[in-house]
Every structure is written in structure tokens, then in C-alpha cells.
Amino acid sequence: MISIIISSYIPEYFNALEDNISQSIGVPYEIIRIHNPGLMGICTAYNQGAEKAKYDNLLFIHEDILFRTENWGAKLIIHLNKPDSGVIGIAGSSYIPSAPSSWTVSEKYNFVNILQGNKENKDSFHIGSTKKNMNKVFAVDGVFLAVTKKKYINYKFNEELKGFHGYDLDFSLRISKNLQNYVVDDILIEHFSKGNLDKIWFDTNMKIRENLGSDFQKTDDPETEKKAFLGFLYKYFEYYPINKKNIFFTLKFYPWKRLTFKDHFLIVKKYLNYIRYSSGINKKTNTNI
Image 1 (spheres, rainbow, N blue to C red):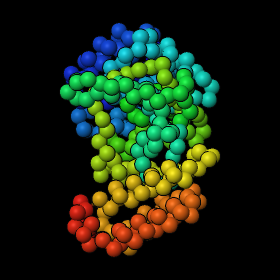
Image 2 (cartoon, one colour; image 1 turned 90 degrees about the vertical axis):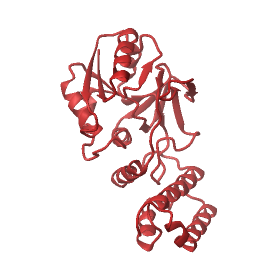
Image 3 (spheres, rainbow, N blue to C red; image 1 turned 180 degrees about the horizontal axis):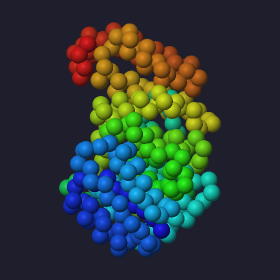
């Protein structure tokens, strides 16, 4: 039995999903719809929904999806009943670099089983990079987050995050410190939109990583660390001016012990180039100097 919590604001999407769930889930369920046209953060909406849930298995999903697997509810319950399981998802990553990034840090570590579409309902394409039925991950994408109520109670969504970004990264990473998150390959959904990685997302991501750090996997990958940090610098200086204060701030996320000497040298050169061309770059930032 599954309680499905949805933060909803588009009736057409919700109505289609409600009908789809009734035809595909295959087990007793309830849908808890939190009407949320931007009135509250998604963490607050999800926690309110979970408080109303009467079943032991919770599923938090976006409303712009449809299930493409028959009897997926029984499959999900089996995964949730695994003793060490934390969050069960359909997209996530098994590597967390030092620098703030989305869960899609590298194709090498991404596990995804999803039909990706768009809001125009045009042709969807299958993204399938799972290697087995249950793939171990740390970060889980928020389009589909399942967890038992017993485990949810110990973590809940972080209501200090006020908007609609970062809730999934914060929730799944906190849980991964004590339990094992998984991406599964036997539940397929079709998703009709992509994420919006704007400045609000970026700022929220930095806040989460400041709070939670990056000490997750046991083995470091210098190449992934280098690419993630350079990507972080590029994004950071799109939004913030290059000055001494901001340069020191970026060093909070520097992968000091995770890089080769060659990588350190390359990043130092990148910093010097940012400083050298700072006046021109700063004119293009979205924040006043």
C-alpha cells in the first residue's frame, strides 16, 4: 500500500496522472494532493502531505509524469522492503564531487531509467543507463522519491529550503549518510519537462553543499573532481563578480586532496585567467559589483 504525495498546480497534468496511476499501480493506494501554486516551498508541501499519509510507503512525485510500467506499485514495495534501503528513485548518481553540482555530475556515475519528453508532448526518448535492477547511488532526482514512512520520519524535507530547488539533493544526501539509496530499472515513467538550473537553483545547491559537505564515496575520481570544479567556477562567475572575497568563497569547495598535481596546476591557471580578464567578465555578471 502506497501513499502518493504530489505538490500540484497544473490541473491538466494532475488529472492525467491521477487516471494513469489508477490504471497502472496494481496495489492499494491513496493520492494526497497539496494544491501549491507557488504559495509554499515544495519541502513544506511534501511534509504536509506526508503527515496526512495513512500507508507505510511514501512516494513523492512531480505531477508532469505518467507511469509506463504495469503493476509498478508491487515492484516499488519490494524495493522499499529491502532492509538497508533509503530513497528509491529512477534517476541519480553514485558520485558526489567537492564542488556543488547537479546530481548529473558525470555519465560515468549516472543511473537513469526514464522516458524524457517535453511540455509540448512531442516524442520522448528513453534514457537508460542502469546496470542492474537496483543501482547504488547517493543523490536521487526529485521527479520520483520513494521511502518508507518509518525512515522518512527521521529525516523529513528541509523546510529551510523555501523554494522548489534542492529539496531532492538535500533529502537524499542526508539519508545516504545512514542508508543506501537506489535507482531501480523496473519502474519506467515518462517525464514531460526538464529542470531549470537557474541562479536560485545554483544558490540553493551551494547552501546544501556547505551544510552537508562532500564526504560520501570511498574512492575519489580526479577527472570528475576537476570537471565539476571548473564547471562550478564557470557558473559561479556568471552570477557573481570576480573579486578577492568571491575567489576565497569558491575555495570552500576546492577538492584539495582529490586532484592530481597537473589538475591543480590547470585550475590555478584558470583562476589567473579569471583575474586577468575580470573587468570584462564582471560586466556580464547578473549581479552588481
